[in-house]
Image 1 (cartoon, one colour):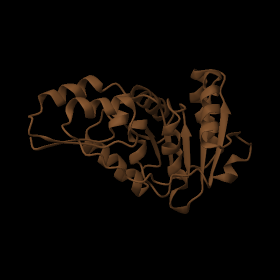
Image 2 (tube, one colour; image 1 turned 30 degrees about the horizontal axis):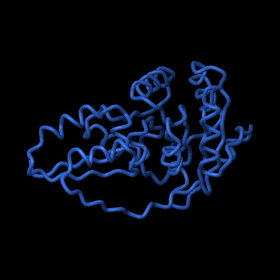
Image 3 (tube, helix red, strand yellow; image 1 turned 90 degrees about the vertical axis):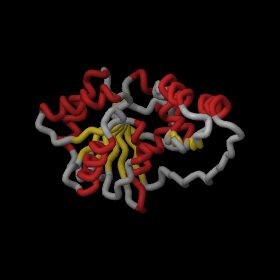
Image 4 (cartoon, helix red, strand yellow; image 1 turned 135 degrees about the vertical axis):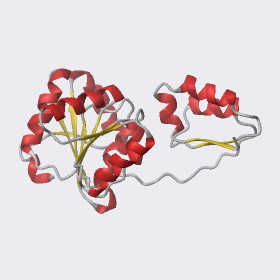
Length: 231
Protein backbone atom coordinates (compact mmCIF):
# COMPACT_ATOMS: atom_id res chain seq x y z
CA UNK A 1 0.00 0.00 0.00
CA UNK A 2 1.54 3.28 -1.11
CA UNK A 3 -0.92 5.73 0.44
CA UNK A 4 -3.49 5.70 3.26
CA UNK A 5 -6.00 8.58 3.50
CA UNK A 6 -8.13 9.11 6.60
CA UNK A 7 -10.91 11.60 5.77
CA UNK A 8 -13.11 13.30 8.40
CA UNK A 9 -10.64 12.14 11.05
CA UNK A 10 -12.19 14.20 13.85
CA UNK A 11 -15.62 12.69 13.21
CA UNK A 12 -14.28 9.14 12.93
CA UNK A 13 -12.40 9.41 16.21
CA UNK A 14 -15.24 11.09 18.10
CA UNK A 15 -17.63 8.32 17.03
CA UNK A 16 -15.75 5.44 18.59
CA UNK A 17 -13.55 4.24 15.74
CA UNK A 18 -10.28 5.00 17.56
CA UNK A 19 -9.36 1.37 18.16
CA UNK A 20 -10.03 0.35 14.57
CA UNK A 21 -8.07 3.32 13.22
CA UNK A 22 -5.11 2.52 15.46
CA UNK A 23 -5.21 -1.12 14.29
CA UNK A 24 -5.07 -0.01 10.65
CA UNK A 25 -2.14 2.33 11.27
CA UNK A 26 -0.18 -0.42 13.03
CA UNK A 27 -0.60 -2.73 10.02
CA UNK A 28 0.63 -0.19 7.48
CA UNK A 29 4.11 -0.63 5.99
CA UNK A 30 6.51 2.08 7.13
CA UNK A 31 6.85 3.28 3.55
CA UNK A 32 3.13 4.11 3.28
CA UNK A 33 2.35 7.79 2.86
CA UNK A 34 -0.33 8.89 5.31
CA UNK A 35 -2.77 11.74 4.62
CA UNK A 36 -5.09 12.85 7.41
CA UNK A 37 -7.95 15.25 6.65
CA UNK A 38 -9.88 16.93 9.44
CA UNK A 39 -12.15 19.97 9.74
CA UNK A 40 -10.97 20.49 13.32
CA UNK A 41 -7.82 19.56 15.23
CA UNK A 42 -8.86 18.25 18.66
CA UNK A 43 -6.43 16.43 20.94
CA UNK A 44 -7.27 12.93 19.70
CA UNK A 45 -6.46 13.93 16.11
CA UNK A 46 -3.16 15.45 17.21
CA UNK A 47 -2.33 12.22 19.05
CA UNK A 48 -2.77 10.26 15.82
CA UNK A 49 -0.35 12.56 14.00
CA UNK A 50 2.18 12.17 16.82
CA UNK A 51 1.96 8.39 17.07
CA UNK A 52 1.69 7.33 13.45
CA UNK A 53 3.08 10.06 11.20
CA UNK A 54 6.77 10.80 10.63
CA UNK A 55 7.65 14.48 10.28
CA UNK A 56 4.14 15.39 9.15
CA UNK A 57 3.58 18.54 7.12
CA UNK A 58 0.56 20.47 8.37
CA UNK A 59 -1.45 22.29 5.70
CA UNK A 60 -4.07 24.69 6.99
CA UNK A 61 -6.87 25.73 4.66
CA UNK A 62 -8.86 28.89 5.26
CA UNK A 63 -12.11 28.02 6.98
CA UNK A 64 -15.13 27.98 4.69
CA UNK A 65 -17.50 30.78 5.48
CA UNK A 66 -20.43 28.80 6.75
CA UNK A 67 -23.13 31.13 7.98
CA UNK A 68 -26.54 30.95 9.58
CA UNK A 69 -27.64 34.03 7.64
CA UNK A 70 -30.86 33.41 5.76
CA UNK A 71 -31.74 30.37 7.87
CA UNK A 72 -34.69 30.65 10.23
CA UNK A 73 -34.10 28.53 13.32
CA UNK A 74 -36.88 27.16 15.49
CA UNK A 75 -37.36 24.61 18.22
CA UNK A 76 -40.25 22.39 19.23
CA UNK A 77 -40.38 21.52 22.92
CA UNK A 78 -40.97 17.77 23.24
CA UNK A 79 -41.77 16.57 26.73
CA UNK A 80 -40.48 13.02 26.25
CA UNK A 81 -38.01 11.43 23.83
CA UNK A 82 -40.60 8.86 22.75
CA UNK A 83 -42.96 11.66 21.69
CA UNK A 84 -40.59 12.91 18.99
CA UNK A 85 -41.93 10.44 16.42
CA UNK A 86 -45.50 11.69 16.74
CA UNK A 87 -44.21 15.26 16.69
CA UNK A 88 -42.43 14.55 13.41
CA UNK A 89 -45.55 12.95 11.96
CA UNK A 90 -47.58 16.01 12.94
CA UNK A 91 -44.98 18.22 11.27
CA UNK A 92 -45.37 16.24 8.05
CA UNK A 93 -49.07 17.06 8.13
CA UNK A 94 -48.37 20.76 8.76
CA UNK A 95 -45.79 21.59 6.09
CA UNK A 96 -45.28 20.69 2.45
CA UNK A 97 -41.77 19.31 2.26
CA UNK A 98 -39.99 19.74 -1.06
CA UNK A 99 -36.75 18.25 0.25
CA UNK A 100 -35.53 17.81 3.80
CA UNK A 101 -32.70 16.28 5.80
CA UNK A 102 -33.43 14.77 9.22
CA UNK A 103 -30.43 14.30 11.51
CA UNK A 104 -30.12 11.69 14.26
CA UNK A 105 -27.12 11.13 16.51
CA UNK A 106 -26.66 7.38 15.96
CA UNK A 107 -26.85 4.90 13.09
CA UNK A 108 -29.26 2.79 15.12
CA UNK A 109 -31.59 5.77 15.55
CA UNK A 110 -31.44 6.47 11.79
CA UNK A 111 -32.50 2.91 11.00
CA UNK A 112 -35.18 2.93 13.70
CA UNK A 113 -36.68 6.23 12.55
CA UNK A 114 -36.61 5.15 8.91
CA UNK A 115 -38.50 1.95 9.73
CA UNK A 116 -41.07 3.83 11.83
CA UNK A 117 -41.74 6.46 9.17
CA UNK A 118 -41.96 3.92 6.36
CA UNK A 119 -44.45 1.94 8.47
CA UNK A 120 -46.55 5.12 8.53
CA UNK A 121 -46.36 5.31 4.71
CA UNK A 122 -43.87 8.19 4.60
CA UNK A 123 -41.34 7.98 1.77
CA UNK A 124 -37.88 8.44 3.29
CA UNK A 125 -34.32 7.34 2.59
CA UNK A 126 -31.57 6.67 5.11
CA UNK A 127 -27.81 7.05 4.92
CA UNK A 128 -25.08 6.37 7.47
CA UNK A 129 -21.55 5.04 7.80
CA UNK A 130 -22.52 1.37 8.09
CA UNK A 131 -23.67 1.34 4.47
CA UNK A 132 -21.45 0.41 1.55
CA UNK A 133 -20.19 3.37 -0.46
CA UNK A 134 -22.01 2.16 -3.58
CA UNK A 135 -25.29 2.08 -1.66
CA UNK A 136 -24.70 5.58 -0.28
CA UNK A 137 -23.92 6.85 -3.79
CA UNK A 138 -27.25 5.52 -5.10
CA UNK A 139 -29.19 7.09 -2.21
CA UNK A 140 -27.46 10.44 -2.68
CA UNK A 141 -28.07 10.36 -6.44
CA UNK A 142 -31.78 9.78 -5.83
CA UNK A 143 -31.86 12.60 -3.29
CA UNK A 144 -30.08 15.05 -5.59
CA UNK A 145 -32.41 14.20 -8.47
CA UNK A 146 -35.48 14.73 -6.30
CA UNK A 147 -36.83 11.20 -6.62
CA UNK A 148 -36.20 10.89 -2.88
CA UNK A 149 -37.39 13.90 -0.90
CA UNK A 150 -36.50 13.13 2.72
CA UNK A 151 -33.08 11.89 3.82
CA UNK A 152 -32.36 10.68 7.34
CA UNK A 153 -28.65 10.80 8.19
CA UNK A 154 -25.98 10.95 10.89
CA UNK A 155 -23.37 13.61 11.60
CA UNK A 156 -20.68 11.50 9.96
CA UNK A 157 -22.21 12.41 6.61
CA UNK A 158 -23.45 15.91 7.48
CA UNK A 159 -20.53 17.67 5.81
CA UNK A 160 -20.93 15.71 2.61
CA UNK A 161 -24.59 16.46 1.91
CA UNK A 162 -24.54 19.45 -0.42
CA UNK A 163 -27.91 19.64 -2.11
CA UNK A 164 -29.16 22.91 -3.55
CA UNK A 165 -32.89 22.37 -3.16
CA UNK A 166 -32.89 21.42 0.55
CA UNK A 167 -35.04 24.00 2.30
CA UNK A 168 -35.69 22.22 5.59
CA UNK A 169 -33.38 20.59 8.11
CA UNK A 170 -34.83 18.80 11.13
CA UNK A 171 -32.62 17.97 14.07
CA UNK A 172 -34.50 15.00 15.48
CA UNK A 173 -31.59 14.92 17.93
CA UNK A 174 -29.56 18.02 18.72
CA UNK A 175 -25.93 17.41 17.73
CA UNK A 176 -23.67 15.99 20.43
CA UNK A 177 -21.27 18.91 19.93
CA UNK A 178 -22.09 22.47 18.95
CA UNK A 179 -19.59 22.59 16.05
CA UNK A 180 -21.71 20.14 14.06
CA UNK A 181 -24.79 22.35 14.29
CA UNK A 182 -23.70 24.68 11.49
CA UNK A 183 -22.61 21.74 9.32
CA UNK A 184 -26.11 20.31 9.67
CA UNK A 185 -28.29 23.33 9.09
CA UNK A 186 -25.88 25.31 6.88
CA UNK A 187 -26.96 23.38 3.82
CA UNK A 188 -30.47 24.80 4.16
CA UNK A 189 -29.23 28.26 3.21
CA UNK A 190 -26.41 27.48 0.81
CA UNK A 191 -26.27 28.81 -2.75
CA UNK A 192 -28.11 31.95 -1.63
CA UNK A 193 -31.24 30.00 -0.77
CA UNK A 194 -33.28 30.57 2.34
CA UNK A 195 -33.83 27.70 4.73
CA UNK A 196 -35.57 26.60 7.89
CA UNK A 197 -34.09 24.51 10.69
CA UNK A 198 -36.36 22.87 13.26
CA UNK A 199 -34.87 21.40 16.42
CA UNK A 200 -36.68 18.83 18.57
CA UNK A 201 -35.76 19.74 22.14
CA UNK A 202 -36.46 17.78 25.32
CA UNK A 203 -35.73 19.11 28.81
CA UNK A 204 -32.32 17.40 28.63
CA UNK A 205 -31.50 19.30 25.42
CA UNK A 206 -32.18 22.83 26.66
CA UNK A 207 -28.65 23.35 27.95
CA UNK A 208 -27.10 22.29 24.63
CA UNK A 209 -29.48 24.54 22.71
CA UNK A 210 -28.43 27.52 24.85
CA UNK A 211 -24.76 26.65 24.26
CA UNK A 212 -25.40 26.59 20.51
CA UNK A 213 -27.12 29.98 20.68
CA UNK A 214 -24.22 31.47 22.62
CA UNK A 215 -21.53 29.87 20.45
CA UNK A 216 -23.03 31.17 17.19
CA UNK A 217 -24.46 34.40 18.64
CA UNK A 218 -27.85 33.40 17.31
CA UNK A 219 -31.36 32.87 18.60
CA UNK A 220 -33.49 29.76 18.23
CA UNK A 221 -37.14 30.68 18.63
CA UNK A 222 -40.13 28.51 19.40
CA UNK A 223 -41.73 27.31 16.19
CA UNK A 224 -44.66 29.52 15.15
CA UNK A 225 -48.02 28.20 13.99
CA UNK A 226 -47.45 29.56 10.46
CA UNK A 227 -44.17 27.69 9.90
CA UNK A 228 -45.56 26.28 6.64
CA UNK A 229 -45.49 29.79 5.17
CA UNK A 230 -41.76 30.07 5.89
CA UNK A 231 -40.62 26.95 4.05
